[in-house]
Image (cartoon, rainbow, N blue to C red):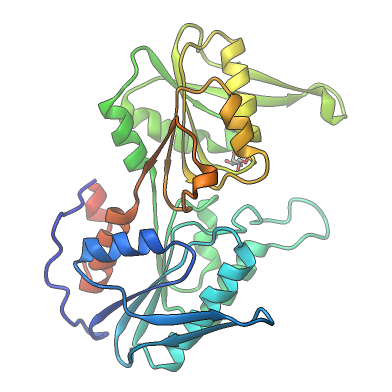
Length: 327
Ligand code: R5P
């Protein structure tokens, strides 16, 4: 992956000059992106009134400008979604020429199909709301399912955190290592990750032996005995999948276990589960802010700031994003 250190020529394009705004969900990442671009975030007020209504006001005009709005959809999810929609509306009503939503983590992405009767498809609803509010483009990182791209009727760039994660492990490649996915649905991305590291793969498979939830068994497809294992997934939410996978590979004879994922959502029992599991290192990106209560001594955060900064500059300059990854 090629990320330049100094971005030049961020002058006006057909949509005008560039302006970058931060929502309130991840100010550190927004600052890092702006620093990578050699810009300052444009000022705005974000106020939550006593009645919980959210209000945005821009400190300067964006009329005829190329605007990038950074807001990850971390907790409190509903507030951050509402703020995103209000901010887009605010920018649109101030006549921005183009609004690109930079959403490192998209909430509700697991609600992407009717997999049982009488349920919503909330990822589609969210995409519709973003478009209706006035976004012209979006940039995001590792959607739970690639098909969600098609829920947006506007152009977008789905980036991946796996280049960063694989580069980290290329440098520190544990010897005799195997890549393991916690979920067969993630097998294809897991295979690409293993190919980048030139390592073999194994899968942890969940199988039912009866009709009740207790009759689920976990088994390993592939060889992990006396190997160091790198478990890879798109997100860690409650860490239930990671807990099952770590225990299963350990039972199958794995030596050191590493875990990596793009999104460290870490909700509910996640941190307590991860704290007691025999994991050597947990490597994640900062698409979701690493708040102090969600940090463990064996966690390593890799920043997506330079990656997002580079992509924003390319979108503004009308340059290929794919060529960063030699595509
Ligand atoms: C599942 O489809 C995903 O790839 C992750 O395994 C899942 O989102 C992790 O959730 P949790 O941490 O709650 O098990």
